Image 1 (cartoon, each protein chain N blue to C red):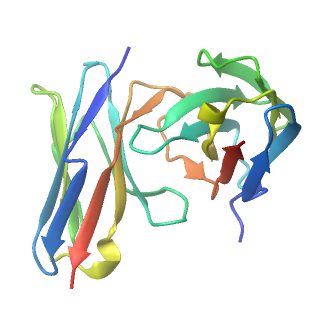
Image 2: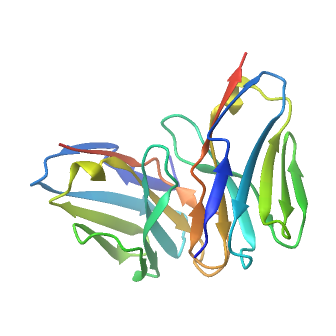
Length: 114
Length: 111
């Protein structure tokens, strides 16, 4: 499927592990986002990248570390997570972060911290 | 900052009935209001959006209304079908990347 692709789809990690989530978009968009989706809560914006530069860090703990090597790829590096970090992590992209346009989401990575 | 409240959290309707989901926002500068549908195990996808210069927009069985004075907007689904069952998110955007989402409404359409 084209659009926004996330890997892995599911991830179980211990609190001392280090893992990375990957997101790739084939839409030619300039902006990419990480969202956290927890049960019965609004989608929480974590990070925004525009043209590979981070433009927003929404008070996210340092155990989450994003990386955007180019406008098509976005990573979320995870280390020493807590059980409450278990959630669905969604990547999204949009054409331009300055213009109100549709956000295209990936299918998410279901993360479980044990 | 912007705050978006969404109600109800769960909605159950009989097939063929209408469903209405309501959202309120706090920032009067918000000017773009998208609605996303997330089916079980799938990604959120845009189903309809409205900008602040219009009061209503319709696309087949789906319509969205916006009351800027009251700062609320609503999603209306008519002639509901089982495949409409999903979680629906409203959102508000003041411009740029800060799209603030509501908590979602889980819609069940009973056949």
